Image (cartoon, rainbow, N blue to C red; front, side, top):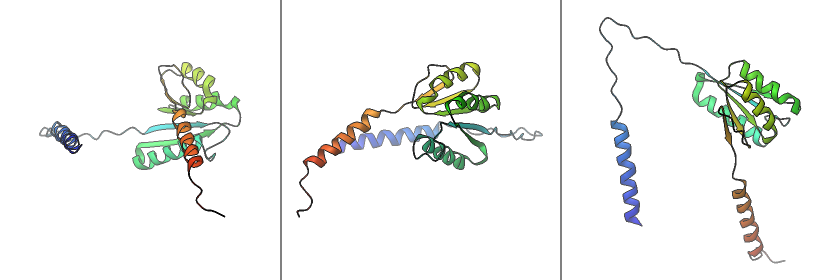
Length: 171
């Protein structure tokens, strides 16, 4: 086992060295030319929630907090905003609003958005969508689904272990 660990460590270190050495050195600016500063584009990300909002203690809140963390880590390179749906009738208009405003990524949180995501993805083929907790087979939609059976399995194991464990105290 120690030998395998050493081999893996050596492979990781050597790949890091190779990656580090592979970068191309910066070319010096030609004489007489000034370096142009390219303005970096701000990535706009919009999140559409269902009726639970961004403080639902579930998917919506997790997605929003993740976006806030991402935006904080990337400073002025990222702009985020959310729209809360008050009913399922708001799904298409809210997704469409972000697409019409030119957002780079529009996120729909929850399987309830199925029809809305498919509809809006067709209407705005140049907009990228992330669909959390379900799948939409569209070229501009990335779907993120969870392996729910894994969590259920772990809950079952925990329950079985609890049932088999001796009592921790005797009355």
